[in-house]
Length: 177
Image 1 (tube, rainbow, N blue to C red):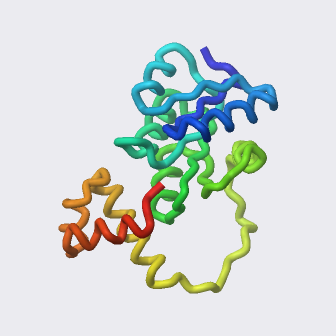
Image 2 (image 1 turned 120 degrees about the vertical axis):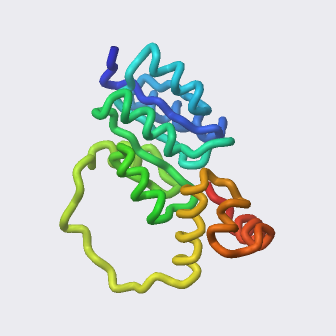
């Protein structure tokens, strides 16, 4: 059974999920919080949400698996992915897997609700001439390989041609969210 105003928040940060839940409930959404993919699967066995907010980095897994699960359950669910570190690689994957939008944290309820309304692309988005920095390119490549290896640091380091400890130090400096 699909509910037009049912929103599922998939986030393992209890405080953030609770704040988002209260904020959306004030906007007359019915909100259910699922801290992981298993809780989401149990919810989808009973109900079909119209909206979903998915954190990209969940404890022990990638939020991309939840995006895929939601889209396979019902392609009409409007899915917004939130992340503390936005990268081109994960944005592309999220959209390919069925998300309608991808937002960098911090994002508030207004931003998320607006993203639900922007399901279609916008050909009038201005293009920038700002070149991408070497550090950004390196980080995007690291994140791309981490996604490919399901966040296995040893395998990612091998594929990147660097020592595992070097990769671990880079990740400590700029953690994936």
